[in-house]
Image (cartoon, rainbow, N blue to C red; front, side):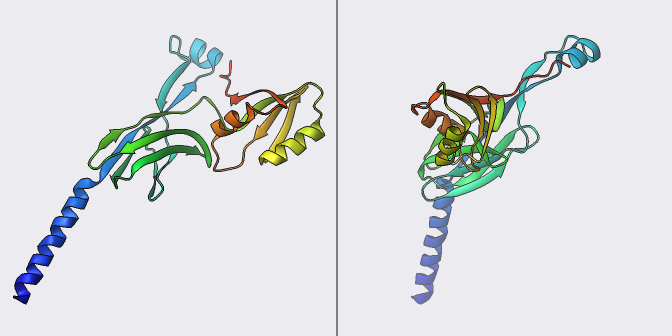
Length: 200
């Protein structure tokens, strides 16, 4: 009798493990980035006729897939692809892309048991850490420094007039700061520090 009971419990354990394995899901996709080539030398001289801008897979981007209970990390391959396998069905996950510890893109992921989801991300053609902020007329540098410290900015650089370049702290999303600052009465405009394609 004991032997039959042990065998029965073993079979139950194996069935439970198999069911759990079937319940896990997979999240995969590609992270894309824009690129450009210098116009004068590469396009007009070295390789006429090729486009100066385009889109390609972004290599070496760190990805985090996390929920209130689970967390996973991965890195994109040379073609920008990534995959998270055996992901427990926790309902809502968040997928975040980070470059040099700065959050640059993200997506909400709803994972039910056994799902095989494709989630692509596109990176902005901009610095992952810097914002361009224009303050109200008459705002001096001392006031900007005090204001920036209250928000946690780690670097402040004046461009011209009341326009400054501000660097966010690591492990934050740039987009969150953009949304927060849009409601600040001292801020007239805020945006990403876009990358300019060089001419030569």
